[in-house]
Length: 175
Image 1 (cartoon, helix red, strand yellow):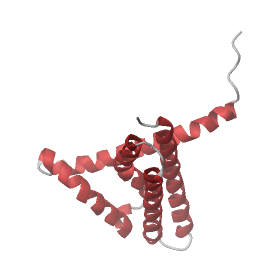
Image 2: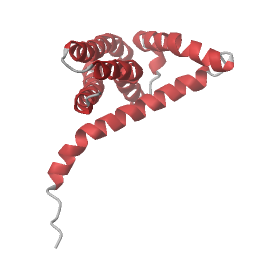
Image 3: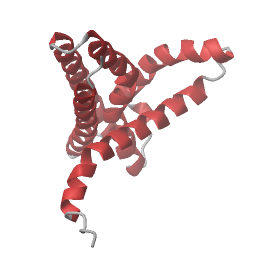
């Protein structure tokens, strides 16, 4: 038996971690650019936020594994963590990409971004090679960025929607 309440709680924490790491990374890079070049600020901020994301995701998985939940729930949490790890790691990196876009700079000059891209390539390239002799890697990288951004957007929306509904007030009573 799988506890949907536990999975929902973990997915809510995932969404909060995605939004938090995106906003924290973006704010830290912005503050860093007041004192440093954009690429230097990104090189300082991204490793720290990526480490924070890994620790946050790991904490959720370990907490679930040590809980009194069923084996099925623990396996589901573990599977979701594996499936959603790369989109979650993309959150702080995407903040740097967005910041660089608005600053009209190329984020590829950041060593931290390049290291992240190489790390993801080591995971995605064998997958694209298995399905298309490596010719698909550019497409797979672009798909990864889009899917990760969409996953993050919907996780943020799912987390924020209840607050928006409360701000709009109660539903009108039907007569």
